[in-house]
Image (cartoon, rainbow, N blue to C red):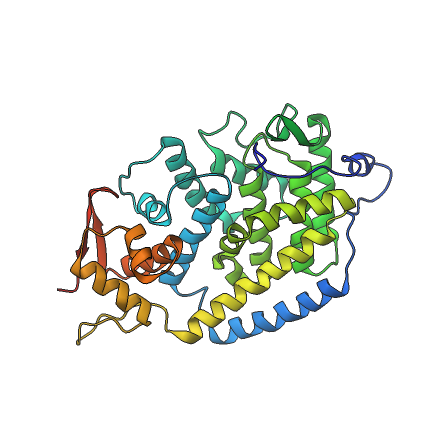
Length: 356
């Protein structure tokens, strides 16, 4: 997999049309296709259903769970190895065994996402403020555009050279000016911004996670519940397709392919949330009868943990024929409801049952 601060591809004509923009009003190159229009219509229908029937913006438990999933996924794309459970523990202030730099990434990302809705999505000053929070103690130029060139490599081969540093401030100003004035639908505009941001590669490091967070901020400016919808989780699951969409857009010289990919991902994130809430009431109700009123998988995992408190997430995944990540999601729900609690380290600790 390509490595550096982010993974991009080789553009057909590297940044030339973006650099020669002082003479006329800047317009990022993209085409509104029938696919894009149909996806915008479908997402609009789903947004209507969410707004009427779901309390995503007002449900603190669901918001916290989704925020943890978002942070885990966005950092995992950048090769952070902490599990969903470990990310949850770091956010809860618990000590874990893990690389200090990866723990710092989690703490910074949580602080940045918690602060996100105080940021103005059309302000470069706020973009730099967000980057400073996200990358504090991780890079020297946290909160500043890069002062040197940056490249993305596959092995020893350069596959994308970021915009030369002397052009970055002007190109970012042009991009934000377009963002403020464009009449394009917010769904499309946010996707175009995401691609152009990654193409310019304005920071020394953190471009991927910053671009995804700003995309979320732009979507939440349109509909506030997007601040809590973990679109990054599906991007993580489709990581190769994400990079391929960027690469193909680079080759075409416009963001159309990437916009289509991101709109499909947003649509599928909404469908996943709606379908999961239709199947169960999301959450665990501990009441007079002291029981778990939820789906069969949660009951099954709880019973296994209850009978074997030292079982690991990996062993649970094998026991119920799920992926480890799926099991970690369910465990996180149980933990957030206070039904179970992790005591001790990941390898040598055990699960404490709080329903006995």
